[in-house]
Amino acid sequence: MHAESEVRIPLVTGGKTVHDVSEDIAGRVEQKPTVTWMLAMAVSLALLLAGGYAVAITLWDGIGMWGLNKTVGWAWDITNFVWWVGIGHAGTLISAVLLLFRQRWRMSINRASEAMTIFAVICAAMFPVLHMGRPWLGFYWALPLPNTFGSLWVNFNSPLLWDVFAISTYFSVSLVFWYIGLIPDFATIRDRAQNKISRAIYGALSFGWTGGAKTWSHYETVSLVLAGLATPLVLSVHTIVSFDFATSVIPGWHTTIFPPYFVAGAIFSGFAMVLTLLLVTRKVYKLEDYITIQHVELMNIIIIVTGSIVGIAYITEFFIAWYSGVEAEQYAFINRATGPYWWAYWSMMTCNVISPQLFWFKKIRTNLAATFVISIIVNIGMWFERFVIIVTSLHRDFLPSSWAMFYPTMYDVGVYVFTFGLFFTAFFLFAKFFPVINMAEVKSIIKATGEKPTKSGN
Amino acid sequence: MSQGTNYVLGVYDDEDVLMDAIKTVRESGVKIEEVYSPFPVHGIEDVLGYKRSWLSIAAFMFGITGTTLALTMMVGMMGVDWPMIIGGKDYIPIPSFIPVTFEMTVLLASFGMVGTFFVISNLKPWGKPRIYDIRITDDKHVMAIDLDGNDKSEADIKKVLQGSGATEVNNKTFD
Image (cartoon, rainbow over all chains, first blue to last red):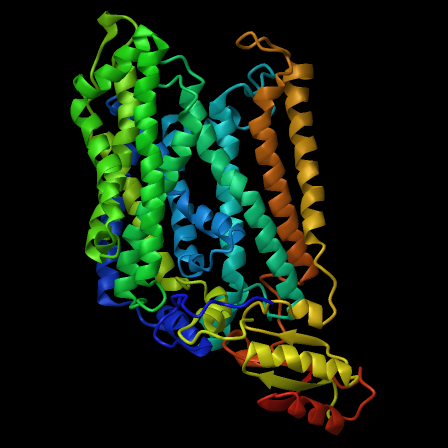
């Protein structure tokens, strides 16, 4: 037994009942697509198509179509990869870590952020897959399969291979976690369905869920254990992504601070993307009673915390470069701030370190327009962070005669545009056909944290 | 009475009333087959007398299978089948094996546990669920009582249910 404090701000406002939750969320799935949705879908599909051209040319003519050169052999592809993987960190963090910490405010945002995670990881995977040049041979190159090239195996000393395991495990476990959460909600939609087709589709998707107490009891254990497994998994994924750089000998990459710094940055950008998407979804779907200002404020607080960790990491890197006494390392950092890519460095600093500090003001962190703008600025900053780390470290090669600059071609841009098309197409399909809020979970807190606080608790 | 399995269903609106009702019904000697809810009700398995879910143990067993599999695979490939010195490391560089071992452990634990959950809970896409009441997945809690499995008469059971705070008491028959 425990008692709820009466002064606690309700997580679901508007005096919603359990039935209202089904009406509000499942009702959206049952409606005919709106004009706004179709317009949004059309724009996403246009991006997908335009970007698809760049992808096709990349596959047909090879990655020589990208702007890479002998010195800068990694640029937009890996920048975009790390950016998308980072964005894909918020969903599982919200559902797993906040579940372990019993943060009930996660319940109305976890579904959409997990969906976002899954789509972002798919977008991320596009880049290493395309960079293979011949992705159809990728199975031999990336997976430990016996092959015909002289029974050589993949190299388990390589962080790039660890990444293959980390990202694919992260993707599959996140997908399972998300789907487990969806099952009871699909059953709700099945039981409300008016026509045979949707009853059959949502019936199959709901796996024949009935909601028995025994099943719920197993279900809760599954959620808790999955959360326990997914928490170190989230942290491992970006740690291993950072190893792609940190285990090399390139000045600016070869630092031990990378794992925590990358993980904080990932959560930072992930929460920013969740805010960007949810503020729009909330408005369009009129979910103000479920995603309240309090939710936005709590997410903004996480942005201040992780943004500040990222800021401290930038300063620490700079300090350690000086303190190490290694000339190459010192040069790499001075060059970042004052070299030909100074504009990228200072964009990163402004967007990632300065802009989130505005959230110290309660007026700003509870203002939706300001939050929306800053959430986009943060993701621009996080893209520049990866660009700065990757391109400015590479473009000054060990021999000055090899120094070069990186200029993206339209195919670099096109492939990036393609992933945006993919991401938004998937997200809009999700928002239309799947329940955007975890109904079963929200229903379970209606009584305890609805607008009428209970004296006895539960 | 008609053929098939006959149930008496107690419908409840509120989870706290339901919890007390389960206690009352069980104390009166009526055997509850199962209670269906739209959302997980905290502590319901205790009042129903269910054992703690053993799925966490299943997860652990699948997890150590993953650990073993990953280590066997990597040691077999790099240490036995084709030993090579890479970056001056041992043939079996244990620190390099940690990430993949961890990922395989998590992967097998998750998939194994979820798969087991689907099997023991009889959840499958082609499943034909017994829907006692269409409102279970909306906002009603339903207590299902199998008439054949109880010694008491239908009238007595209905009386107990009504006395326990059920908003409706219905009959349901499955073939």
